[in-house]
Image 1 (cartoon, helix red, strand yellow):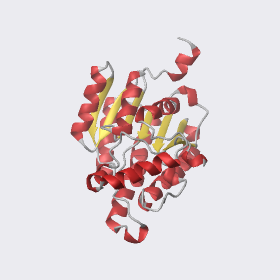
Image 2 (tube, one colour):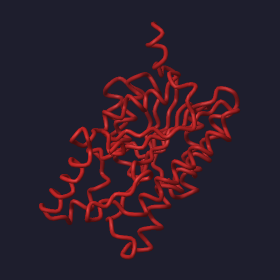
Image 3 (cartoon, helix red, strand yellow):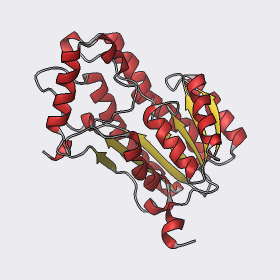
Length: 269
């Protein structure tokens, strides 16, 4: 095996991916399995997690499905216990699970929407990390990859609401949490980095919005993305995979505490 092959080789590694039943999480789970990792596909929708596992196994990979509600501490603790039974040591954790509520301006944002999103998108990252850290400690270490967002960096308001302040606050919190996590656990050989995607298609985040939006509203939304992205289009889940593999593998073994933006140039202009 060449040096470059060894750097990105995930044979024998174990990984947990939350929100693995669809969108970005599904792409991450399948990609890690393709490179030899044994993947736990965790999702609040059990059927979607099982479908992800079936696809991975059909392609020759190794995977198991576990149903979890990342906002519920007991559910997350149960996930950690099941993972420990399957894999005594965990090498990679990807905190990907998240939702988006219907975006409204702050004075119109329902409190229940704020609380629900923060519970899943920020508290869920904390709960999963807290539960999985003991499976990474003890010498071998590991890599934690938290999925943030460009809206944790910059505000977005092209004359209409594209994203809610609850989503922006949660994703900014994920970035801060990642840096503190990296500082606290470096001596345990545990690295923590965050990826901040831009406007990527192929996810379920905008399903509820599209269900009630008019065609004109959808065109306005997509037009704003195209106009604001120098590459002139949305990204795809597979286009994030190379970065995820890099962060999960030995190729990034000296990288920790970073938030890497992946946005087609959105934040560059």
